Each structure stands twice: as C-alpha cells, then as structure tokens.
Length: 408
Ligand SMILES: Cc1cc2nc3c(=O)[nH]c(=O)nc-3n(C[C@H](O)[C@H](O)[C@H](O)COP(=O)(O)OP(=O)(O)OC[C@H]3O[C@@H](n4cnc5c(N)ncnc54)[C@H](O)[C@@H]3O)c2cc1C
Image (cartoon, rainbow, N blue to C red; front, side):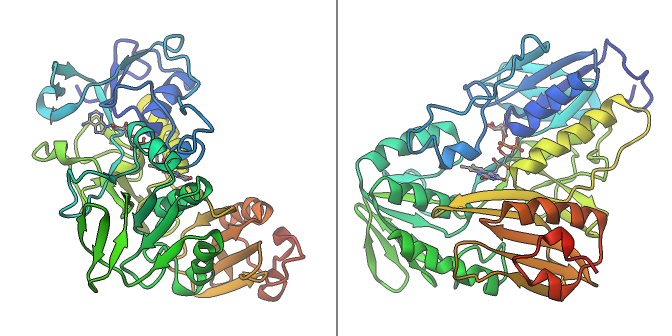
C-alpha cells in the first residue's frame, strides 16, 4: 500500500532514513517533534555517533573541539540508530533496502546520503593527499597542521578557504592552487570574489590562480606550467557530488550531477521515497529553477517539510530562501538568497574594508545578499527577500542606514 493512501499517523508505519548526517538526523527528529508515532530507523555508513560537519573545518581541525556530535537523545526519541552500515541498494517494488548485513523493509524511505568530495584524478591513494568531509578526515589532518608542514590546498572554494585559514592559524606554510582566475569562481561573480583574493595574502597564504595540478609527487605538487610547489601534505577541496551511486538502477530519477531529482514536496520519482539535504535537488518556485544546495541550513529546513509530508494530509511545498555562512581569514561571510536572475548589484560599504555587503536585486526587489562582517544586514535582508519588498537603490547603498529602512 502506498504511503499516500495509508492511514495517517499509523503507529505501525515504519520510516527508514538512509544517511545519519544533518539531514537524516533532522528528519528523524522532526518526525518525532511533529508527532509521528511509528518506528523511525536511521541508518548511517559512518561508525561515529551522528555529528555536525561545519566545525570540522574550524574548531575540530584546530583541536579547539574534540568532536561535533549532535546533542540529541536518540533513545528517548525512540529513534533506532544503525551506524557503521552502508546501504548498497534499493528495491522499491519490495519496499526494501539492501545493506551488507541484509535487507531492511520500509513503508516510507527518506534518502539523506549527502555528498562526497570530488577526488583529484591520479591522487587516489597517494600518501599525504587528504580530503575534508568526515570526522575521520579532520582527525587525520589535525596532526598534519600541528606539525606546521608546507601544505598545498587544491581549490579556492569554501572548504579550501576555511582549511587554508586553519592551516595558517596553525603556523603552516600554505599555497592554494586554483584552476580558475579567482576564488569561489563557481559560486560568486568576479567583481564580488575580487576583494576576497586579497584575504589570502593578508593571512600569509599564497593564492595561485590559473593553476592546474598536473601530478602529485612525493614532497611536491607539479602544476601544468611545470612549476613545482613544495608540499608535505595536499588537501583537495574541489567540490562535492551527491552520494547516490548506490541508487543506480533503482528507478529513482537522478540529475546530471547524480543528485536525486525531488519534486516540490521533496518526493522522489518512486512512491513512498523522499530525498533531502546535499543529495537532492528540488524545484524552487521562488527562483523558478531547480536548486541543488550543499549547505547546512538546507539540511536543517528540508527535513521539516519531509516530516510534515510523511505525516500530514495536505502536501507542503519546500521553497526556502537558501542561506549559508563561512568563516574564513578572520571574517564571517554570510549569503542568503540566489542571485542567478538578478539584474542589479548594489554595494554597501567598501569591499577593501573589514565589513561590507553586496545586494542583488531583480526588478527592484532584493533576491540575494552577501554580507561580510555585517550580520544585521543578513538578518534584515533575509526578511526582505522573503517578503519580496521593493527597495530604494540609493538608500540601499548607504551602509550607515539599516537595510530594513532602505525600502522604496
Ligand atoms: C568540512 C565542512 C565544513 C562545512 N561548513 C559549512 C558552513 O560553514 N556553512 C554551511 O552552510 N555549510 C557547511 N558545510 C556543508 C554542510 O555541512 C552540509 O551541507 C550538510 O552536512 C549536509 O547534510 P546532509 O545530511 O545532507 O549530508 P552529509 O552531512 O554528507 O551526511 C550524509 C551521511 O550519509 C552517509 N551515507 C552516504 N551514503 C550512504 C549509504 N549508502 N548508506 C548509509 N549511509 C550513507 C554519509 O556517510 C554521511 O554521514 C560544511 C561541510 C563540510 C564537509
């Protein structure tokens, strides 16, 4: 019987969540918070108690925090944890998952397997080459930082910048090699990323753009222009892709990045199966395009919609204003919205200074905002984006005026 036709609130219903990261854990918790009385099983491949990832590239890496386990009493919430178990297949026709320990039945399934880092071709298994996605990765990197090695970071994205920040703080010599002409090339327009280029040098890290890795040798990274950069350790931060290879052949529709193609209710193409977090994209009504969001807030908000749709009669649409933050080079960077369709950019403050904001407008309304050291702009901007308020461009450009007073 399909979940849609089954009696709601049925305490005999069994929800199984695959992936015990932020999105999986939050789905299980949201089900209980919203009154679900059936059984909830959370299956995760990692052996550790479920933990939060953002501290891995910050406090955990520097040894300022031992770990980042979620402070959740799973037992009290009657959430069954099955950790250290990889799910290897899905057979929707039988409502069953395959794990190495055998099959697991579900009435409703939630896919929350997150993302895995993209590997550098040829660097697989090379000693001294690291990724930064898991607690195990962070624990392997901690002594590397403590030894104050020469470190090469491949990729000047969010993870690369945060790792470079920690490595400089630990006293390592850091070179960041980036194939594009600037940091964050995939995420931000050139004019916005331009002031961030200087942050690397200010921190004492060297940023080399237009630099492609040719190969990694013992003690060095060789670039495609023939130059050799000394490297006792290499950290690869060139992006992540949805961890969905195990779904191949299951009938779950996947997109070109391997992401689960969820609908606006976070349902997949297969009945009784939902998807949420880094592993899934969804159609944004607000931005009129499909979004694949690899940020923490999406793994917090999406699960509430999934839980509501598992429990409730009337389907709830997921249409968030995306949000994320990054802590890099002593700065707190926050972004809210989605700027792809913007027609106007307005700066608040001097981008060479310590605190500034970029606002993106479409037809006079705020659609996205990036704030560096201006959390109040972020908080107010988020509300203005949600409400679709018309803004006054001249007032908006005055950083001394609260953002919420810059309306037309
Ligand atoms: C180092 C780091 C720093 C970050 N910092 C920030 C930040 O500052 N701000 C921000 O907004 N975002 C940040 N993020 C992103 C944020 O952490 C992610 O968006 C979030 O963790 C996504 O949650 P998720 O549950 O969808 O996926 P994940 O956290 O990837 O969890 C998925 C889990 O599923 C498990 N899994 C995968 N396949 C299977 C399988 N077949 N069977 C069983 N289990 C499986 C995985 O082992 C994993 O534990 C950071 C990410 C990293 C890696």
